[in-house]
Image (cartoon, rainbow, N blue to C red):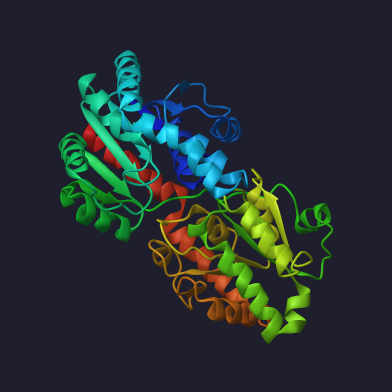
Amino acid sequence: KKILYYSDCFIFGGCEILLVNLINSLSSNSQFEIRFAYAYNELYQAGVEKYLKYCYSLDTLCVLGNDNLFYRLDSSGINKLVVFFCKLPFILIRKTGIYSFYNFIRLWFYFRKINPDILHINNGGYPGARSCLVAVFSAKMAGIRKIVFNVNNIAQNQKNVLERAVDKYINNNVDYFVTASALAQNKLVACRRFCADKVLQIFNAAPQDKPTKVRSEMLDEFNITEEKFVIVTVALLTGRKGQLYLLQAIVGIREIAPAVFKNIVLILVGDGEDRVKLERYISDKNLSKQILITGYRNDYCNFISAADLFVLPSISNEDMPLVILTAMSLGKAIISTKVAGITEEIRDGVDGVLVEPKDVALLASSIVNLYNSKELREQYGLSSRNRYLDLFSLDIIMSQYCKLYMQLV
């Protein structure tokens, strides 16, 4: 049976890694023939070349949209008013429907050519990338009978009559929607009026990554001495990931535990539209000796492996972050927030520490507590690794997708 995956995203992020896991796992299954098609941009292509370089059934598609351009503008550090006026013409063009019409025709021709038994659409959120919604219309017109639609974030409320009409068509023509967290599952039903029986929950999965460098090599790259207490976070540098609140917590530690502050180093792995803002904050608060930003790194697993503590301070719009699963698989102590599926990954006080989003004081004190207790860090790390093996290992999750595909065909 032929499965075609389609994805459209401005960056090769966490939800794309789920596709990598699916493609790599199912490619060796003789029951399935796998193809992967994606909307081309340079940032996304870099991820494809790293993670899917051994997959030969790849198709790049020219799909129209503003997401990639807007991401670059937001990340440029240009004045926000100038950015707004740069965006305005493209916003108006999108509202004419030209993008959607072109994407519909382009995808219709492509889907007719490939003619898969199952189309699996991967969308960051909902509505998310507009071409993913258009893909449902194109697929049905091309005669594709079975459609699976992954939603990897919390759905937004319907805004108008047009959105309700589009959602009704998509609900009627998608066989199953898949979310990783229970909250995303419930929001998709409540906010978009999709049939509850069609919305399935399947946990995200991350393979047990094997670091390619040891801690000393990673520290040497950034001139960090071995005795330093290394905190790592891996995420897109954007507001919803909460890095600013983590920086504020580091400032708080300087006040409540100056000895701890002097010995910690925070490494922010990632890039995004908030990088300039975060760099300014680091400079203004005189944190340059404690905090460094690496930019986008394909070898983020090496950073997590080298860390004494992994922190993800997300404040909103999360589903089930794969970087937490990676940290769990590596047996790391974790601090994160009570947002969406994070609470299904980490049990507070058992596998790590969960704080309320934006609670800077509790975040700071939690870091200090784990700094002072190696025994507690090891306890959390062992528990999180065992939970990963029991619930989130790749074999377990991939078997659920295989079962879903076999049920459809």
